[in-house]
Amino acid sequence: MSQKAVDDEDMISRLPDDILIMILSKMDARAAMVTTILSKRWHSLPQLHTCYDLDVNDILPRRYHRQKRLYGEAKAGYEAEKCEDRLTDICAIRERHKQWMGRIMSLRASLEHYKRCAMRRYVKLVNAFLLVPKSARKCRSIQKLRLQTFGSSSRYWIDRWIIAAITKWKVEDLSLAAVDHGVFNFKHLNGRQKVRLNSLSLSNWIAVGIHKSPVFRRLTKLSLSNLSCMGETGSILRHCIQIKDLRLTACCITVDQPVFQIDAPRSKIKNLQVEDCNFVKLYLFSLPCLETLVCRGQPTKIHYGNVPQLKHLSLNYLQPETIIKDNLTSSNKVYPLKKLFKRIPPLENLVLQFKGTQVTNNLQKA
Image (cartoon, rainbow, N blue to C red; front, side):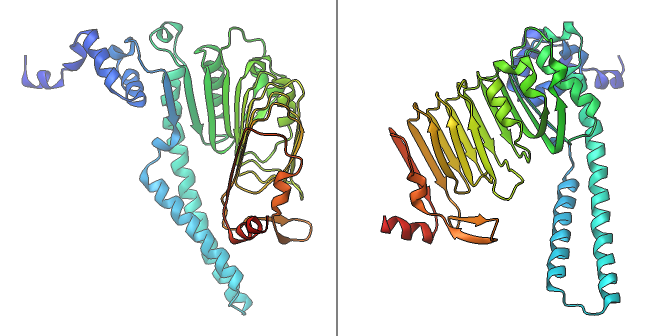
């Protein structure tokens, strides 16, 4: 045998299966996944990992993050200069605007190029992992899966991944995150049998028809984050009555006085967490099984209705000043502490965390 043939021979793949499986067990989930995809010899080996995080950011080059930082700085610089408004000559203003826009648009085009290239590589990787024959699915199990994509990019493939993950791989815990806003119509899952999904997390993702899908009526845990439209949340809670754990993070309601109302007398929610949302008021009209309520971020006036099981309350308003923006008068008002304890039900545990001189003064007066 020539020296070149010896050098080209894959000696590791000739090892017994037991040793190869031991090597895979020492790898993290992502490294093991890539290894089994690239090698036919390793592809048929059973996988010990059951949790996979397929993050598109892992594929983006460092240049993308550097360009993204420069893009943000350019936009901030343009806005700052526009507010200062030092130039008085209209021609000079137009010329300066043209220079800023040229730089910003150039950086934006560069970012879009990197995103397209990364998404093409990401599609190939996820296709090779999820869209495989039934015989290949016997070698590994996926209980928890996280997909992060660039919103509407490759929408056709994203729909196929979600359907395959839930119906073929029988994923129990699914997390969908989009760098931009993503959309999926959950009506595509109607009629699917033997679904095991019980936990769903959506970030920057618009869930169309989720409350009408029988697949999601068995959900026990739901997490929604970075959503600007909360219109369907009430319908979700009324129809998906098996949900016991609900988490809302960085969600907002685009109205002058954002008010979030929950009226789900059949709901089994035990834990509710609201974090960094823009709700000014939170109405708990009916949550008969609620035991734990956690609010973090902006101070929120909570109105307690039918919550007979509420035992644990945690209010963590750690902001520089505990104030609320009055959208009608465009003025800031000190948040009155007495609003926190208005008609509060009997509790076993109460945790209060505040920050700011206004709150300290109010506590001393109380």
